[in-house]
Structures are given as C-alpha cells and as structure tokens.
Image (spheres, rainbow, N blue to C red):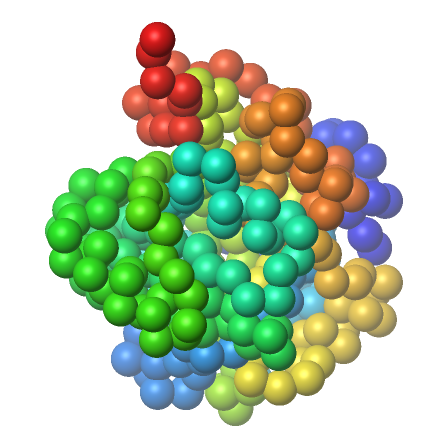
Length: 282
C-alpha cells in the first residue's frame, strides 16, 4: 500500500492523532531510549505511508518495541526553524544530492519549551551525524555561542562555514518515537506537518504519515515489513519540500514524486512564523 495508491484526500483516516496500536506499546523513558538506541551517528531512511498502515505494521509488536512516554504523553509537538544562506546553499546541496552537506536548525520541543541548536552532517558514506547544544536564544537566529558551535563543528568535518545564515523556513509537526528493545532501530512517526516560508504555508495531507527509520546498519525489521507492503524509501526532507513547494522559482524535482503524493496546495499564511525567508522590503 503506497501513498500513490491513496489518491486525493478523502477515504483514509486522519493521522493527526497517534495510532491506537502505538498506544499499546510499553512506555519508555528518554533515558532508557538513549541507553538502548541513541543513534546520533546513523543511517536514516524515510518512508511515506498512509496512516492505516501503522496498525498492521506494529500490531503484535509489544515484545519488540516500546514508545517514548513522558508524563503519560506519547506524541509531542516539534517546531524546527532552518537556517540557510541567502542563496539557499543547504537547500541546493540537498536537492542536488551532494554527498557531503550540512543542515543547521533550532528545534523547539513545544510541549516543554525546551530548545536546541542542531547541526546535521551527512558524509560521503551516507552516514548522518547529529550534534547539538542546549539553546536559549530566539528560534530564528544564532546566538554568538551557537555561531561558535557551528564554526567549530563544520571545521572539524572539513567544511567551510558560511558567513551568513538566516531563518529560511519553519516546520511544525507531531512526533511519536518508537524504539526497538534490541537497539537496532528507532522509528519516528511524524504527522500533521506544516511548512512555512515567505508568507505561505503548505500542509501534509491529514491521512499521510512520515516514518523516519534510524539505524546503524542495513535494512531493519520494520523496513522489511514495509517492503512486504510495497512501500519503498522516499526521497523527502521537511526543509527541502517546504522550500520547493513555496518557492515557484526553485525546482524540487528530487522530491517531486513524494511531494505530489503527500502535500496539499500552498496557501497564504499570516502567522508570524510564516514570515521567515521573505525577501526584505525595498
């Protein structure tokens, strides 16, 4: 069952609430998850699926998986503000599939108000390394401490840091985190994605779910199950899809198929967060 088979919005159940099958998994604390499967250095693959597929995918998996639970809550609100150069170096590096690239963002855990400054680096072997620091500054810019952290981190990877980075896009979504007791994989289940840029917004269809599977090795048990259902890895990034969808002058052909399968049409948006990435007034 693929997103393409889903067709236009209509028949499938909305994914804005966590699937009941995920609520049946054993609660796991953040400490336990980090002990079992921190996977900061990892391979990450993404799959776009209809919400109804979560039931057969995780049914009867209580002996193999747990779910992140904090104070009884199992799905959490995230808001990420992506920082890019004026000529969108990060966007274009991802669109062109450059083997060595980076992404800088602030991530706010909306339910707690906690904020982090994160750098994701992808190396020549396709391995993703995420490093971050606690962050108390505004979400749409770097503090001097964050700037030093960025410069030092990129230098350690042999990457020249850009002179200017500014807020380029914002993404909001809900996330449930499922973890294999074996530590083999961590599966994040993202729903309700909304991307903002330059006074516009774009939404993921309400029946669509984005699965991100983090692992240190090859195909995981969950991925093998997905393949049995005819689902293959999707070329999709939240930041890349947001910018490509909301900037008609740019081509997002690397993600065109996935975007067409899961995103609604862009719409004007007056929220403050939607102003990032707008051209300065003359």
